[in-house]
Image (cartoon, rainbow, N blue to C red; front, top):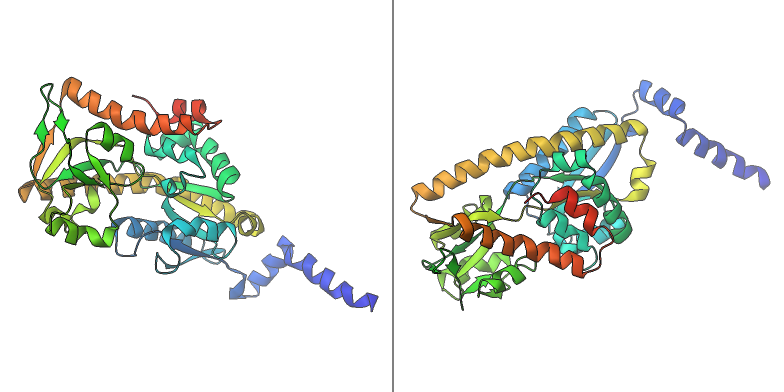
Length: 336
């Protein structure tokens, strides 16, 4: 019976042998191409999911015959706030979505929320490497990319917001649709943050059950919320926090060639997606203004005070959570 183990050992040896793999490839065996199954936190038609599709396409183009990402779906497969855990457990290989969904476990996500630099800058100054450590330590996954940076958030309202004597905005008593990352900032402006699932926001605005919403600039038209939200407060604040993560065991099992292809595509697409979204922001900004949305632009000290309130709320939250990486991340990601 002892001898029956030898073929298994030999097979294992062949599976990890690069030479054997090369021979298999030369023999034209298509199954030598490694595949990663990926999901997104958003439905496929959304602009952010379309951007992730661009990343998938880039990897698949560069990795032909070596590595392939199979983008199998979105929130219909796993609830968005459970997707990273599904990656950690190996139920799925790769995921794209907001890091801030996991703020309770990984307070370092606020470095991206409160960031004033691009992903490319953070790769160069060491910030990205610290975030890789945080994702690994706190969430048990490998961070590959911080995509779609440079998209800021705005407060939109149905009716014209009141102004303060110093040129700011007074949102006292207004019910503003919020997410956990905005809550303390909105409260500092006097607003009452309300939690409304995205699919219910249109009806809520139509019935005026709340008075406005925080939202990134680009998706406002996709969802037709601009039909009701006729005022936008500038400047924008915060920044998108969209990560691509992969299961560590799956990553370790990939060939070095596959890893290199994915890492190079990640760094390249961080820049490409930034540029794509800057163009999209300009288009959306022009379109909503042309369609009569009124932009209330805070200036000088009023603008500085408004932005201080936003960014301070994110960095304070991380500090209070006791992150060991606070000082290093603030130095890398915050330049105001």
